[in-house]
Image 1 (cartoon, rainbow, N blue to C red):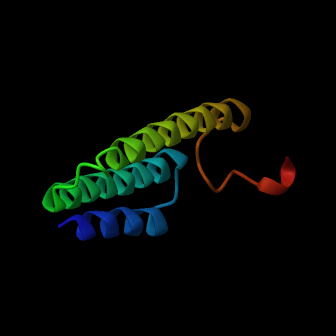
Image 2: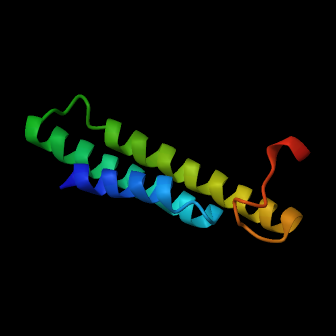
Amino acid sequence: MFMSMFTLGLTGLTFHRTHLLSALLCLEGMMLSLFVALTLWLMQLSSISFSASPLLLLAFSSCEASVGLALLVATARTHGSDRLSTLNLLQC
């Protein structure tokens, strides 16, 4: 089930890249599926020593989301929209 969630997010990222917000949402869905899979895997192992790993992954995921939203706001202010076709990295 979690592999299908990850694959669905990856498919959305590769085929529906029209807006930056949709790409960021697909990345966030992929990270959340990894978080749930890692948490359930560690619960099956009943490992106490690695219990901080899912929290660390969740912290990195929230940092990734905040950086992505900051880039989205900066892109919308400079280019006027969040369409990925209008972004050109060579114009920096």
